[in-house]
Image (cartoon, rainbow, N blue to C red; front, side):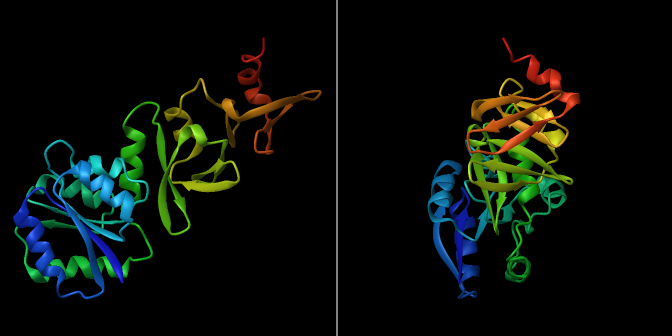
Amino acid sequence: MRKVIIVDDEASGRQLIREYLEDFSHLILLGEANNGVDAVKMINEFKPDLIFLDIQMPGMTGFDVLKHLEELPQIIFSTAYDKYALKAFEVHAIDYLLKPYTKERFKTAVEKSEKNSNQNKARPLAESLLMDTTKSPQRILVQSQNKLVTIALEEVVRIEAYGDYSKIVVTDKTYLSNYGISTLEEKLNSSIFIRVHRSSIINLNKVKELNKYTKSYDVTMLNGDIVRVSRGYMDNIKKLMF
């Protein structure tokens, strides 16, 4: 069984999807929303596996909806406007249904979602939306097992480079970000998050103490983690001392 939510501001659009879903007994329709605000509330409450999402809606677009989700389900876009198609496919959305579409075309989209049921192809889109919103975003999308969740940056203790990705440490949990540590550094508030090593960024609000050695420092975080300050980033620490 897979849980489904329909988001479309037009009743006819919701009705068509509802009718086509009748051929898929394992897809359980949890509810429908005709605007982005209600969609966000419903998706965050029921945590569906798949949503059919219109893009151009009054007040909040489908892309805006994705910015406010706590966990990201699979996304099949359903819209009357083809101008968004390139963006959708560039970020590897499951599929893009251009209205009006046939039952066979709908079936193809659902089959694509089934084949990728353990993968969330919309992750690059949602994460880029969160990160590109402002210079210093308040939340970031991260990997948690097979789910994608958003966490408040104020909860982050430290960030550690992990190849082309980054590990985000929140107290006793570690998540994976799709972005490299240098990209995250550019986006984060530099008065709170400072680079102390080529592989480490720390949240100053989560620092417990600083231990000085002959030629370096170790930073002890509130969760007990110890982060080494490399020589090349020593000035970042010294600027904070009074």
